[in-house]
Length: 287
Ligand code: PAF
Image 1 (cartoon, rainbow, N blue to C red):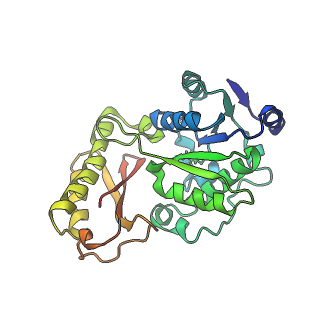
Image 2: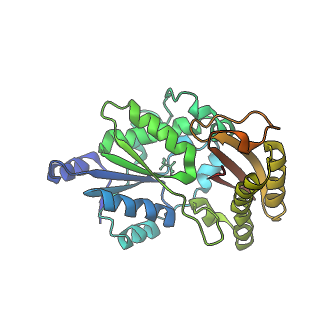
Image 3: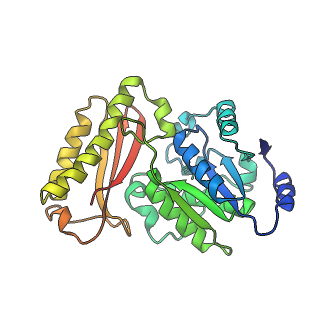
């Protein structure tokens, strides 16, 4: 596996690429797991060359403790990528990613960055937009792969890609889950065994919502109460937020008492919860 950390080496590689080849990028912040493996495998099937990037992006953390605590194990990640047959790893320095100032730019994301996760983590999506745009600028991939666990991030990245002079295709991939239903995430590495077991209640609550909507004309206020109780009673988790939105534009469903199954549009439910100081998120199409 070739580990590239400067632009000259990347450009030399690019010169060897045949015309008409498809270059796929899988951007990551390391702490790799099966969710990343699924993205890489999909990219390997669809592209002539796949480059995985590892860069823990400081500007997308709204809180410096979270940034400092973000799991990092370079050697383990490298072995993981070798095991998947990855041939190119881009591991840029902070200086290459942020040559002037370690600061997010200000993108017009049509308000996408202010909704849901954006409302809870101000500036987070501007940081994501800045780093993916820089990766697109440096590597010029034809496609980039992102997981739907970060559903809103996928929408943000699509918007960033569409604003580029040479737009690229953004491919989204389904959420990969543990057998318990817990969505795979780098943050799961920080959970104790008890917290990890309890964290499965997030998906249980989402599945409960899906089932409940099919049976009853249930409004958001009642469904949220039931879901909160499932998660909070796991003993090790505390719900931060449960939101119901229209899947097509992520607009919040404002009416608290109108049954969710009465809408003629798909409804996506977003959950965030804390296990100690570890923030977990998940989402699911519930109707
Ligand atoms: O999903 C992630 O790991 C990060 O947000 C990303 C897309 C690599 C940008 O830093």
